[in-house]
Image 1 (spheres, rainbow, N blue to C red):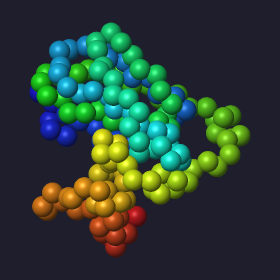
Image 2: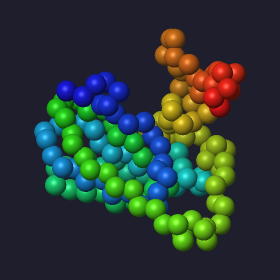
Image 3: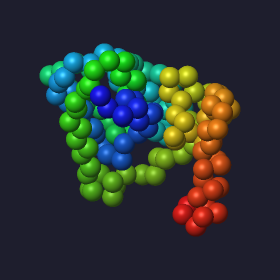
Image 4: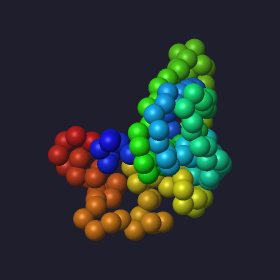
Length: 145
């Protein structure tokens, strides 16, 4: 059985143009793949679709698409994930990155403890858990951020 930290994957977007996620097998329950909007858009933290990954099936999505894997409730999932990047695309891409997504309240399912600096505005932290602002301040004070 995977360690607790490997039973789910917090919301994020990839540093790729496209991502291919192939479910190779094993029996598992739960662990839906939840997708939200594209990075830089107002819809970035808006729920789009939740997909039930099945052995032998694959999902291809834009790397800028916010996504995460819900908790595995039973068993073990084995996946092959490929990230494709294009240096020519990146060289010609206009800087579209911005904070439009921070101006809109997120859908609950699209909120990320790991990546959203405003997480605590929408969901309380568990006792003893450090928020992202505090983590960043601590890292900077230690010379690592």
